[in-house]
Image (cartoon, rainbow, N blue to C red; front, side, top):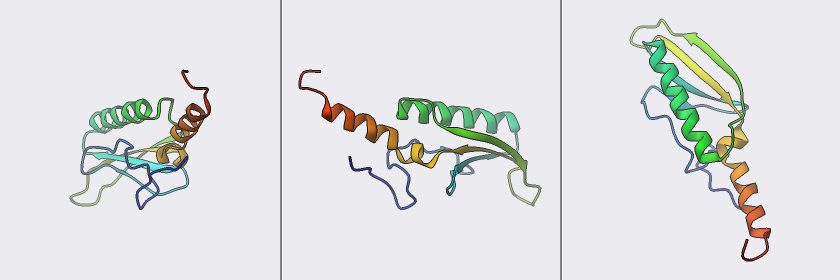
Length: 109
């Protein structure tokens, strides 16, 4: 099964965080970062993204840690919430395994 990845190694159809301050970062256990001056808002956006990514993947996303930090530099959003996610999940590897298994199923199933 061929994975369709972008230049950073993520599945092209993986849901991306919607806010301009949020991003999927580098490997290993690629942090997905949500930044805001309001902590509940950052947490809500991280939860919404996690739900969308798990729905896309069809199984729970492998999150090894949730990291909370702050950035007090001028002009930066204060809170940083990071979900440390398995890069294979973000690349869609479980989807490829599921699809490969479906290709091996007898016709009509």
